[in-house]
Image 1 (cartoon, rainbow, N blue to C red):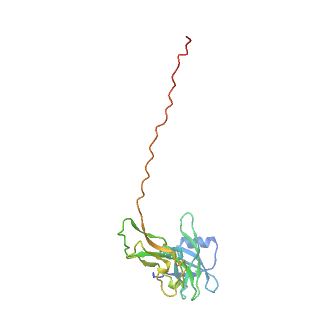
Image 2: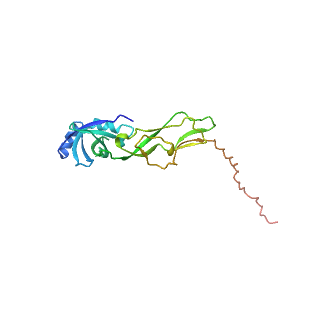
Image 3: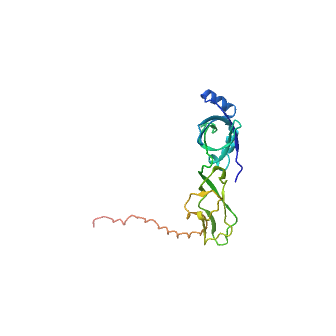
Length: 213
């Protein structure tokens, strides 16, 4: 499981465009925190800290800890965000706070580890499922689910039911869905080219003298 980021924030009074513009000029972002069974909170956080979360593999789906004014940190996730269309930079974020023991559905990437058996001519490893939905507490969200494909042959395939996850994590995908398989790619036989037919040449017919005897 990847190290969880801790973002520090300070409460703020809701302000207008001028206040928000000043905050952004200082490298800070206005945020609003919802959920968790408590009232919403307006705060401000460092743009660099939030951008660091968004640059992780999970990106906008990352669960991270938010510490407001030195109080106990709580788990949050991006609920919504606003991006400057010209600069491509984050300018506002809504964060969802989780209550203790609350489970959420997350999308987690699947990584294939090991070396499959590719000794058969044309054998290629194919990954049919690159991410999967899981239900778990934010603190237990895996960074990725690793699948060992060592020795995998074309005679078998790995399915969702073969995945191993930690306690308290439920997989929300069809058990018979294929995750990875060895496929045999054969060179297609070239179709014989059709012989080109010569175009029919229409010649001039024989001319008669047309003279009278």
